[in-house]
Length: 180
Image (cartoon, rainbow, N blue to C red; front, side, top):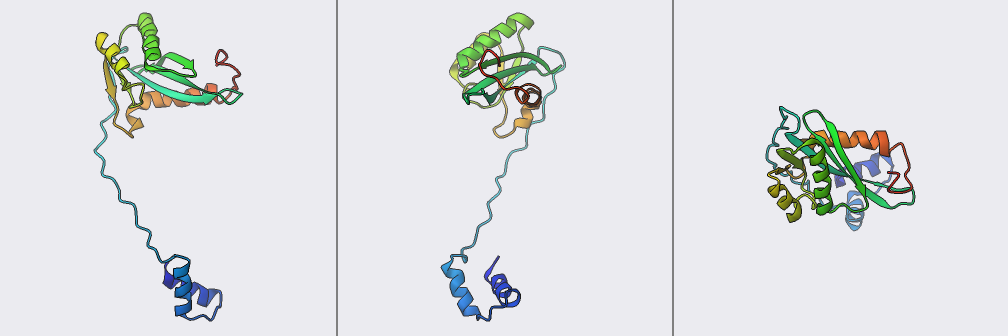
């Protein structure tokens, strides 16, 4: 609200008989005369469309979720799904899930259902680590990172995370990691 509106409000609605010079002096003392600059909008590149695989076991998606135990300790879950049929391939739960642990979990899933061509991930520190990228290179698996700030490019796993949050994590309180 600018000075003119303040003046009219105090004069006409509140009924104060002060003149405009007095109201302007108080307006400045309260530092109401500083203009709030509008934020500049950042121009972003167009998002890439969500790729839909043609067969199972071609593209997997991975993402982390966080929750807490009944005593307040935080734990994380690593969720892995197949993008073709939205099948949950694995959930790994622990207090800490570094890149080496991710590679072990993926090795177990690969033994169970075969190797994917591509794994789609966001830009988290575990996913850009040299250990995970070297593991993927040894296995001839392409790690595809989504654009920063575009979780809709990883929509399949985000929807799976929502289901896990509402169907399991939101309904139960866990006391230990084993229970989770």
